[in-house]
Length: 147
Ligand code: SF4
Image (cartoon, rainbow, N blue to C red; front, side):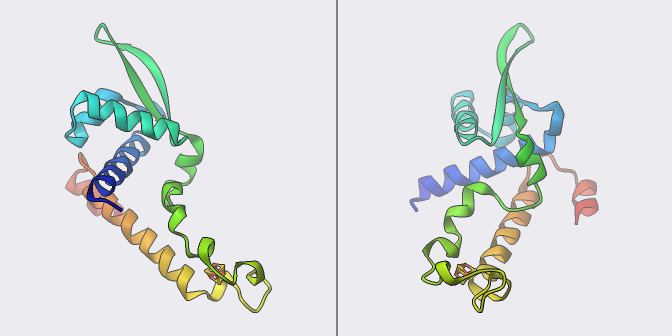
């Protein structure tokens, strides 16, 4: 993965985290890009990418006499907010595993005892914790409460 792609992925993850934190009231696209330290053009691109990936819904809204968009997390994203990110599922070891066809809940080879899968899940959780820690706008009090 190129450094640019890595940066884009990180910006998307942080943006999605902010949209999820906003919850059902949503967040204005302009607030989002300000929190992320982007300009309006970059912010619009990030919002569009998240919408295309089906992670957020964008509703047009008149705000201060200007048309903008408000971003809402999709219901599945709210439900999954403390689970794994769909956009990182491509790294799951199962997709390239030679034992996939014989792996199952009641088989000799089982996800319940798979070191590769366990390690991958732990990495996902650790990455998620890092994103939460670095989320802009979170107060020290909130960080303490969440940890
Ligand atoms: S759980 Fe483990 S053994 Fe099963 S398919 Fe995934 S990586 Fe392969």
